[in-house]
Image 1 (tube, helix red, strand yellow):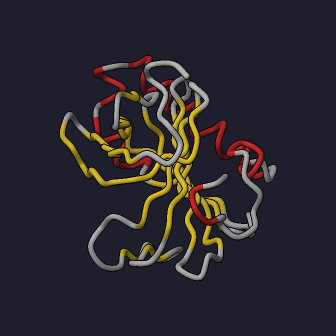
Image 2: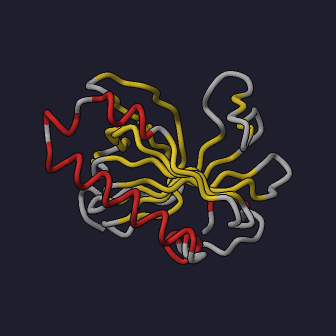
Length: 178
């Protein structure tokens, strides 16, 4: 295991940065880390219920989150308290930075939602992305973000998110095993 790999079962803090400021930070437990992809599990970290219309995130939900050190996205499998799969929330981010006990990603405003049955695939926050000014400040990063969203959408429409995350679509496993 390399110095920047996280030990399965160890605690870790996930930090999501947006516009140079911490948007949210929360505790998680490392499921696996192969040096490229880090997988963690965490309970829904926000207070109360967040109803997006197409999905509700609520206390008791558990997210299995996949971060890549070489890809411009993070994929979060969302399960209800009863372990039923709600779907996948995908954040377009710069590649993850993993350090001892922490992972940080910079949110680039674009998101993708994929329902559990794969029939609903929604591109989200494209207006926020356009308003962020990233294309003016860093054209290369903006182009990579759009490419990442396109790649994930295509993968989702082909039913490939479970293959990408290396997890079957069945109930979440206990004790952090993947």
